[in-house]
Length: 229
Length: 229
DNA sequence: TGGAATAATATTGTCGACAATATCGTGGAG
DNA sequence: CTCCACGATATTGTCGACAATATTATTCCA
Image (cartoon, rainbow over all chains, first blue to last red; front, side, top):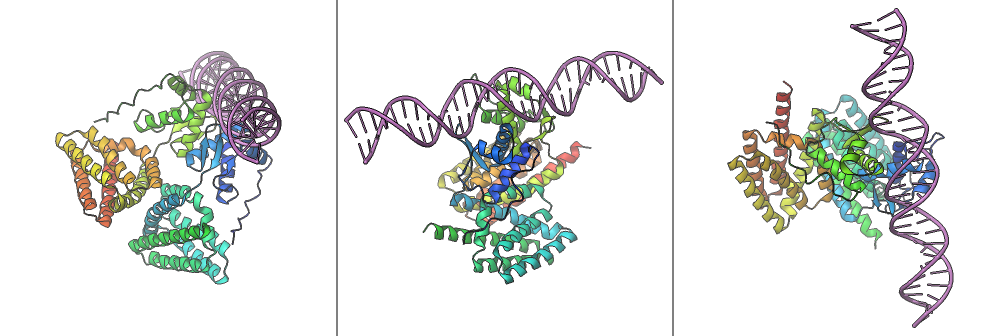
């Protein structure tokens, strides 16, 4: 039942001493993939040992991630992965609902033929995952599907906001697809949205996306309350 | 015609050497109030002289602001205020439309009696500003009005996202209210929304807010094209 | 005079040493 | 045995010096 994290590519970092931005990426990825869990302390020396970066660069990276809202830094107590309460998750989903809703509509309106084709292909892959019961792969492709919608809508600002919002709930997302039922209904949502988009029904796509995200939260909170029984 | 910047409170900073976060706030405010204009280089020594902070703290602050997307840092060329192209402004407004739309709806649904009363009071003040033709004050209260909607809706995540989005366009917002016509229509929008909210029409409030934000962008882009004639 | 090479200056990047604070462990008093 | 005080250790914060790079000024030659 516990979600097997996807292998992060070839960390610790290669021979050359990494840049501050690279260290930030390194930490960010480990948070996304669940190696660094919410609340976990990020001790500078540990990161130095694992990345080979100098302390200055590690500290810079942490400051940057603080600005991104990924880690919290307390005076003389260091950095830790910011943890989201269930209430925060609810708020994040409400924001996602708004932003991804707009994106779905704009995708229907403005997306290039190329992106539309990619969406169709991706949907076919997702259908296959459902049939073959591959929740991990589904979770990965699901992320790609949502990203494609957002990026294909042509709004980089929204894309960045969503990337930020998604980090703290990335793991939870995967977890939810271990429920077969949830996986099937989520995919049905996807397919319906693809149809609406291809039919050029922007408003319909937006409404569908909002319902889809809302449903995602309900599943999540169900898992949460199950977990704390 | 040029917008008189609101006096930032009592900077340079007080006697005690400021903290990294304080320096970040100091810079952020100066960007918001237009003292630091987009593209302007932020030389470390200058900030040190003006704030009394140590170099380490200034650099930390800049890294943090980079994470927030407010400044850009180039290797060996330092930090500069990130400038938004007209296309980025368009994208920002689209994101605002989505987020503030949701907020208006949620305000109608969930806001406390206290916040509702504050909204009514604030609206009365705005009406007064329109009658007395005080565009600067209107701009300030307009900001408060929008903030009240968002915060009253009870979603801190959205509030933070919007705060981030608004910084690069803060100055432009003020500028737009020097057009009497724009000021009047904007305030009419506000009043209509207050009515919808008080009537409990959440969906109506959301739709109205989306139209309002969209109209704001159209005015802005008109100013922009005027400016570059 | 114009322009390219070069020197001088300004600015940012990096590192190491030390100070400040928190955390953990130990021992003693009740 | 528990709790508190105190010291030892670990961790983070701060500063200054110097290196690397960019920017500006100067010189020299065609």
